[in-house]
Image (cartoon, rainbow, N blue to C red):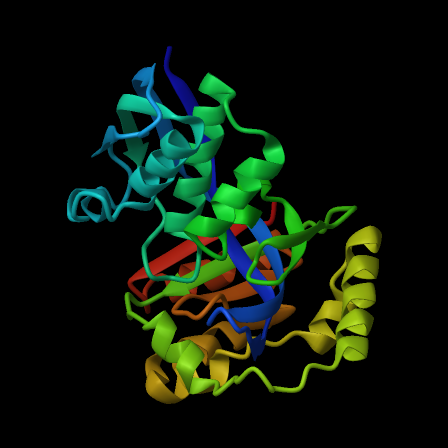
Length: 301
């Protein structure tokens, strides 16, 4: 029985990098939101038996989309879909063969969670088919795969903390149109984190974070971004813009179209423009698609 799911891209509407943890990871405080454009992942076949070693042969084939080459060029075992499926099988004590196909539409290295959302989709499909892992344990598996994967399991909009594994879903919905511009520039995420110089003793103002949390919750309850517009930041912007002036220029081009705000998502390299008016978003998209390699018109879900 084939199963299919949408793997939606995500954006960071707010992103602060806090102190470095004893385990080497960085704590974050972020507002993540799912957007309309997506990959399409299909679980084609599952041939598994009960065996405690959990050894699996997993295939992922490209089935169209804008960027099928992103799947075809990943070495075996490095694709996050394969890694998610292998982790699921080891946890469930299952061995055998699993086949996926994917329509790949989310560019890689863009701060849009393309690999993370595919990994989350693989976990969802396998648990829908097999039902061998509890929801809390599925979230724990997601956290082992990457900082964005736990959010991508359920999507929507949420305040994400810890290493991305502490998720507070937001009640209410903010309807906004987004333009996402990306010029294909690769940003080294590890280098971006290192450039922030966050040690274990880096001071974290929890009272300030709690005030921001309250303002974000209020925005989503009221269906607007008034508070967020005044507090929004992405700690990666300064070092990434210094290293890649072209990304800063794209941000300035986006801001020239007068969105509610323009910002970098994740550690880069995509710039997002958040618009209340669909017609304004379309105008910005028409102008920017002539200027950058990838330009996507979408909306918050």
